[in-house]
Image (cartoon, rainbow, N blue to C red; front, side, top):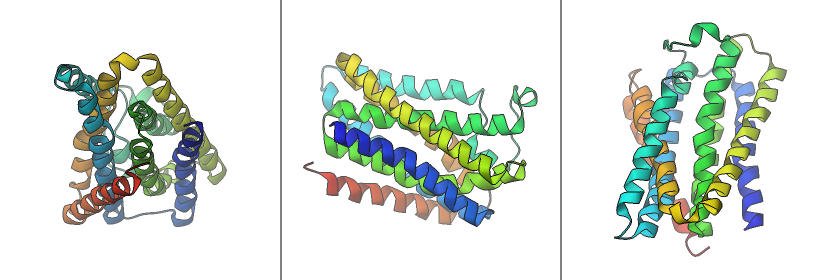
Length: 254
């Protein structure tokens, strides 16, 4: 499992850096592209949260601990809801749409943007690490693969707003490395949580899944439907979902 953990860490962290380098080449992306990318990422995360986290959580819970899994999903969603009051929607920032938050005025634009990115990566990393609790390598690789796949186009999209607020190419690369490190630390923390709280495995798995579902429903899907390109974004979501379904099927038996 240590080899799998190393592979997961490199995949989750490296995909963000790879996407940022792609963004440095593209520089500017239109809303149509942004919405398609975000729709694809939403589909990937939706499949990963259901197949790799929520389904195993309810399977482990069994008939006697269903309430524990339900409580975990609600708790995970509630936690992200609280964060949402403090940190601006990352993809609204990426789309350069205005969004007001109480603390925005007191924080520099660069710090605000980086904080938004980092805090949106933490739940993804935790979810990936928590998936180790299933004990099934296929589930771990499904979640990690899904997160890594959506990290690349998502990172491409966030580069343009960083340039728009005056961040240099060198600093963008440095920030991508820092965000990749945050993602990898989150993976390790998630894996540690399920090892320490093994008896609460259904709760922890479901909490990670609930957190991801909240982000998808509250932030990602509404954003893809706000610029007139919702049909393309919807088909991109379907493509992302099906891709993870295929990935999971390929990982069965591992």
